[in-house]
Length: 160
Image 1: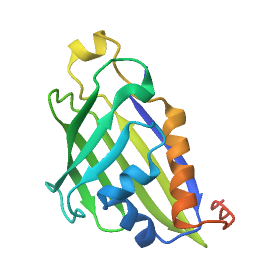
Image 2 (image 1 turned 135 degrees about the horizontal axis):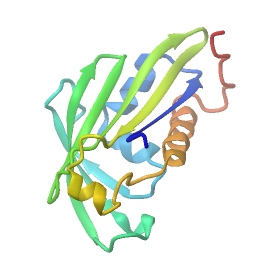
Image 3 (image 1 turned 60 degrees about the vertical axis):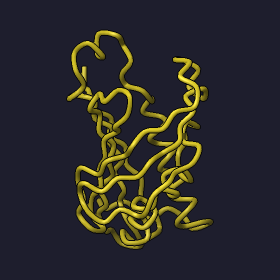
């Protein structure tokens, strides 16, 4: 079984417009489809190693009663207007990675959202905690991202 989800969507915005949302802690909250991200604190990120705090509530998943808690998002990949990825630090640091790759296409960007839990310790895999969110949540987040950066614009055609 694969330990990674990858979904794509053509978005009628430039890579720079999309990247601006992805580097802003408030942008993460705005486009989240899981319902867990409640607010964020911190500055826009500009390099690998930068961090910000996300205030979470796992109630939306209805799986583990963690109450309100904070995690630190640490940027692990940063290529301006091309790719950004992060891991989550907190009480537990399982080592899963979320990210986006952005490729310019005619009339917009091909955005690839990915979630990789292959680096998670075996004890978490055996506990069947991962994946934390389903593939459909990544797809929904891409839809919210498109609505955020290109409201009302039709999806560009994908390259043949």
